[in-house]
Amino acid sequence: MAPVIRFHNTLGGRVEEFVPLEPGKVKLYTCGPTVYDFPHIGNWRAYVFEDLLKRFLLYRGFAVSHVMNITDVDDKTIRGANASGVGLDEYTRPFIEAFQAERAKLNILPADHYPRATDPESIRGMAAIIRTLLDKGFAYRKDGSIYFAIDRFPAYGRLSKIDLEGRRPGIRGDADEYEKESVHDFALWKAPKEGEPSWETEIGPGRPGWHIECSAMSMRYFGPTFDIHCGGVDNIFPHHENEIAQSEAANGVTFVKYWLHAHHLVVDGEKMSKSKGNFYRLADVLARGYEPAEVRFLLLSTHYRKTLNFTDEALAQARTSRDRLRNFLFELRHIERDLPPNPAVAAAAETARAGFAAGLEDDLNISEALAALFELVRGVNALVSRGTVGRADARRVIGLLGEIDGGVLGCLTGEVPAKGKAEGEAEASGAADVLEAGLQALLDARQKARAARDFARADALRRELLEAGIVLEDTKDGVRWKRARPAGP
Ligand code: AMP
Ligand code: ZN
Image 1 (tube, protein in one colour):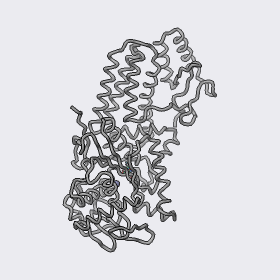
Image 2 (cartoon, protein in one colour; image 1 turned 180 degrees about the vertical axis):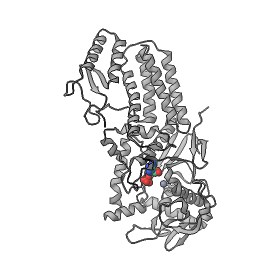
Image 3 (cartoon, helix red, strand yellow; image 1 turned 135 degrees about the horizontal axis):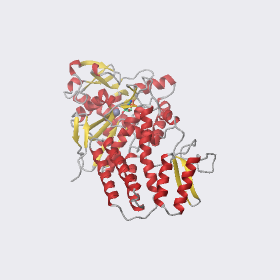
Image 4 (cartoon, protein in one colour; image 1 turned 30 degrees about the horizontal axis):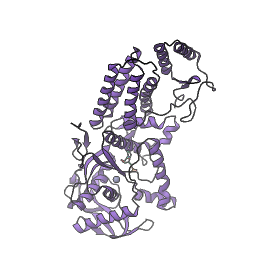
């Protein structure tokens, strides 16, 4: 029997079994960047969560079709372009490029499609939905703009569970973003205005409101209904509430089966955001000596429905935890003895594999999943200390971690950076850096043990050096050493 996967569905407000519309296939839409500025670490939290979700579904054997939109026309992009005195396209280009470059650095798998709101096909799709909404009486025209009448859609508010007492039918708002307290008819299509881009369409000239963009871009690839829609919790209202209203009113069918939302990344208790000025970009964190994979590990390792407090301690903790897994892998790679298989290693590996998957099946419980891996480290290390782990067993465990990392975590492998060097450049002995006398003595003792074929002692000494931050590498020209990491941020 296939294991059950459960996700917290914002729509039902509870954890539900995940059953895709079509067996074995998942249609996933994630709200992409509004490219009026560079992405910050808070944005990356949402995108890394979505990557974990997608990678886990792939790992579980689903064929995932993933669409992420690029919001390249809305109130904020227009404001930014006007303030800079350039066209929308020129203004948004560097932000789109930065988004893609940072996405790759954080090892986030690319989406299958990145439609832009300004693509002619997107605009046509938006106009077609709005045409249907006008025809069905869910939308009305006022002063050249077109609004969605929320009181004509009885399910309005189901996702965000807003208090409809405060509902103000007939009151209109043009802004893309507004507070829950001012529930009102929202703009689907905005009348042409001096200083704003405008498109000629079947519903007349103008430009889209933000919310209609995602309805049109998801429908373009998935049709009227798809499996999973994600974003940060700030997207629940009004953005996703409005997407549901427009899409379901137009198509008469359920828009999305599962809504998954990442909670915020906060700084000193406040949501990291451009408007609050409390944001860090990925580059700011890398400049402090962290690797992209360490940032990915941090963003990944807090459950997506918990607030992530972005602090120095959290970064340092992520580094320590990731190092533990990496050092374990490194050590396994250097086990040289051929020993008969130890059934305890196979058992520990299988327990870890099952525990990792079971954690993620349970609403992406990453803490549980990682705990299964740390338990593997503890158990296998104990066996290594007893000298009962040979090369074949070590390879088995490396294989398992490789599968888990390559498939899901995406942040364990890669070069260990050397002291004071740029990413990926390893520094070997013989360079300016000199090993401290005590450590050199350990290294000498390890070489002696190795020459005497006392591999258990050689392995123990290697471990001791590793704990002191010295990584050994046996090459055909003899042993080389490097520092496990730069001196610190
Ligand atoms: P935006 O570019 O503002 O449309 O946001 C892109 C994505 O980042 C959306 O899914 C937001 O919900 C998400 N997001 C923005 N700020 C944060 C934050 N501080 N923590 C987590 N997610 C965020
Ligand atoms: Zn969206």
